[in-house]
Image 1 (cartoon, helix red, strand yellow):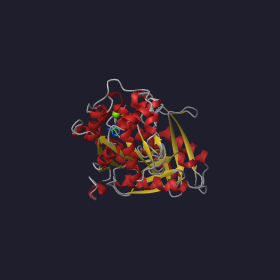
Image 2: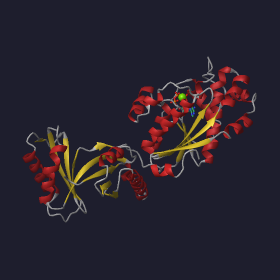
Image 3: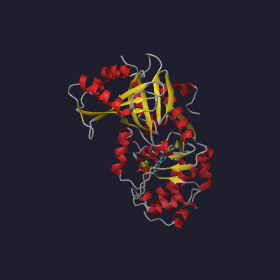
Image 4: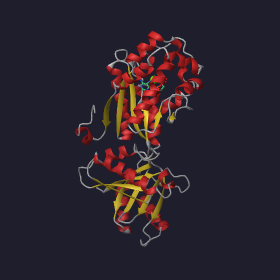
Amino acid sequence: MFKEVILCKYGEIVLKGANRSVFEAKLAKEMRKRASLYGHFSVSHAQSTVYLEPLDEACDIDGLYEDCKRVFGIVGVSRAAVAEKTMEDIIAVAKGYLPAVLRGYKTFKAEAKRSDKSFPLASPAIAAEIGGAILETVHSLRVDIHNPDVVVRIEIREKNAYIHAGQEKGAGGMPSRSAGKGLLLLSGGIDSPVAAFMMAKRGMEIEALHFESFPYTSESAKEKVLTLSDKLCAYTGQMYVHIISLTHIQEELRDNCQEEYFTLLLRIFMMTLAERCARGYHCQALVTGESLGQVASQTLEAIGVTDSVVHMPVFRPLIGMDKEEIVKIARVIDTFETSILPYEDCCTVFTPRHPRTRPQRENVMAELEKIDFAGLLEEAYATMYTVKRTIFPEETKKGSTNI
Ligand code: ATP
Ligand code: MG
């Protein structure tokens, strides 16, 4: 058996100048938290790579390896065998470790990187030796310098030498919690979880706000939203989900306002409540899953009206995407199958038969005069309660649900 470590290469962080170390520290913290779910690992970083080294036999290296692909800021993940810094040991480990790793490949190339310049052989010589050792051991493999199926890498670093092949793609983006906090308007649909993923990928911490309309929407609809939050937590680690009831607001709209404006008026309530919630929980922006022209409330005119009631940035990362592109991401992040479960969303309760697609702001605002806008907002805000979802068992134990 060979001692294995996980190597996670970081991406865009390397482009950061003076504050690169701040991002590195955030990433290392995130990796440390993740690693703690899989046993005792030592976590260190050097030369654009985070090293995760198991400290005892009980470590679940397979589990952590899979999880590393969901950590933002990481562009490539590989497993490596550790060797002592002598050519004898490096060759012995390469011969023992690589045959299983290289199974299925036809051609390879060996590359060496010697960041410890005191190592007696230069990189091309190390690569040539290991290439030769591989050819001796795996007879079905050929060398292809220009277009290999797989690249075998030997890295001579400060403490050890590492041998690995076949890096897998990481989630990319910037480390979690490195780009402020946004409040996501989270419905049970396909779009909003994808919007959350896209902003979280850029390092934004995400809190969610869900509107329910009990009894018009069901308990299962809310459970579905919490399941979607759990799926997002696979990437973000944890998430607070705030829940507000719109039942009375919707009944008032139904009873007093023109039907063609229902959805837009509801969206005005949603955005206003969301901004208040965002300010209360120190979120600097709102995030929605809107896509231009997807439905009547997402025409440019309708978005103009809903935007006019908020006074903080509203991010709509899906605005220029087709449904097909959104679905593709939803499948990758595993939210799609949950999103298509057929439960009512409050937006589909009392839906107008002929919604306004080109609303005039004055006409919409005139409709609001017919109801007690401020009073209904207060009443709805008072229904808010918060649930914390997390992948970290320690935090659940600290009494984090229904805070
Ligand atoms: P999805 O529901 O996945 O976002 P959709 O096409 O159903 O897609 P709409 O229902 O028009 O979109 O809603 C647009 C956006 O408004 C959503 O992406 C979401 O950000 C927000 N939204 C809609 N319904 C709710 C809700 N019940 N709670 C919180 N936010 C909501
Ligand atoms: Mg929806």
